[in-house]
Image (cartoon, rainbow, N blue to C red; front, side):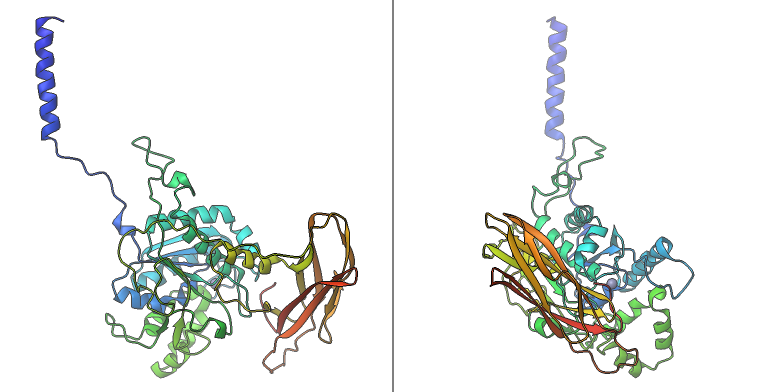
Length: 463
Ligand SMILES: [Zn+2]
């Protein structure tokens, strides 16, 4: 090296080390605080947020930040405000939902892109929503919004509207609650960027929400009482000086395509009449009841939603899976949503979640009730089984009863179809659920006795 080159190198090194010493440390980018939520509400359709708006108004009073995720844009159903239908109606309803939430002061709102599914079967909704894609998106939104608490529909089946889409939002929210904190789930979301303009890796962080609460889509809520906190809708908001039901109703006014005729009627009522309607059974009732799904902080079941919650991340908590129930070598049990929910509660540590026993459903008269069954044969040879149904007078088993064989070491699907009697249009009696049962035997031994309570109605969503 020449003397000049050596001298230049010395100067260069001196300048370089001076630069490093003088340079202030650069802050690495942080998560965007504008999207941090205290509560993430996960529901199915535009207007479903109404199930929680009286509570959200209260939470906003307490300076909680709220974000909302809808499963679908609500593109099916009648349009009471205009001519638009199908996807165009969905585009309108997205804006109605955003406006309803903006009225309360909630702007962080997302839609998963699921499609409306007119049925009570959660499995149809999950299939129609591209379950995997919807879950990936919801896990992303949990990691983006980092909620302390998730609030959603109760995943279960019962007599009520029991919309499969409502249940699907509760299923996805529960799955996301258990996955978003796991760095091994959707790892591309939580990987740091590999280049400046990173197109694939999202640089989110795993986030474990602390509690999940449910609200049931059931007619009778007795089994859910005392399973979580209650909030009066009649209390007066500190910020607006109005009752929470009134703030919720003002928010609901945006849903013109779903409720224009009702809202027009409300416009003709005086304040006392409106309050009576808004706090009646067909609206919010006087009290919102939540069901505690799980809390990773302990605390009381009926305590406030935010009881025990302190700011900051908590470690990922892998759900405790309860063991599979033991079954005899040859057995028959309900399948479809019924067995799914038993597995779901087991997989997500929700074994205390209330559910009706025997299972129940409300169906429209003169339609077909399908009783889906698993026939399990763990023995080493083909077995013959027979299925019989005990039904009320006027109900007819159309197919699925009689003798069947199931091969060795197989689980086979069977189903019994029952034609239900019509419910007269002029029927005024409140419908009473009827208990039906399916009896399964093999070689003269009972291998299954399945009960189901079925309520017949003039109108109900398809099974
Ligand atoms: Zn809905």
